[in-house]
Amino acid sequence: MSEWIGPLISAVAVIASVVVGAWLSRSSARQQAQAAREEKAEDRLWQFRKDAYTAILAKLAEAAREQERIATGYHESEHPDAYDASKDRRERDAVVWSAWSACREQFERNRLVISPEFTEAFKAIRKELAAIDEDQLPPVLADQIEEAFSGGHRRLLSVALAEIRPSEQR
Image 1 (tube, rainbow, N blue to C red):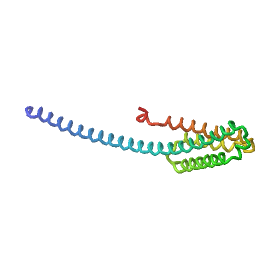
Image 2 (image 1 turned 90 degrees about the horizontal axis):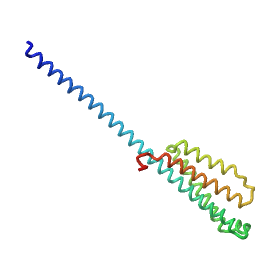
Image 3 (image 1 turned 30 degrees about the horizontal axis):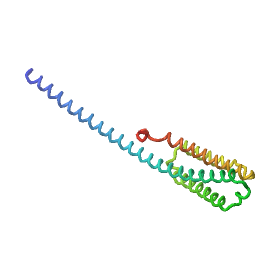
Image 4 (image 1 turned 60 degrees about the horizontal axis):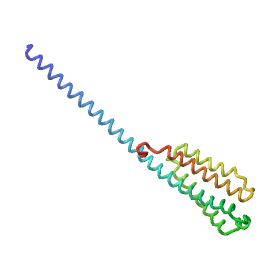
């Protein structure tokens, strides 16, 4: 009887090892598949967020650039009053506010994927613009609007860059 107990114990040990190994392998495969699904979901979310940030920042940059040209026009013109009434200034003004409107539309359209930090930085631009006294001299008003747009662009860009996934920073 002792002759077959040793091989029986060995066989049971091998079978138990195979069962435990298969169970661990299956568990590990499930964990890897779950991790891959989560990473893919994070990548897709980041791609949506990156596209939203790109669209918002592009429109805000356009508004800031045109507003800077308006502000510069006041400072470089020999007659700021004439510049204020000029066709060039009115056309640039239309471009500024059209770009700002498109920027706000992009922000609202992508609100679900935008981070809270980006949202707060965007709201700060709105607050800065709302706080500007529109009864000021046009050159001062132009400078303040330009600073709200360009400063806001810098802040939003900083937030967006800080959120870039480590895999994309390489």
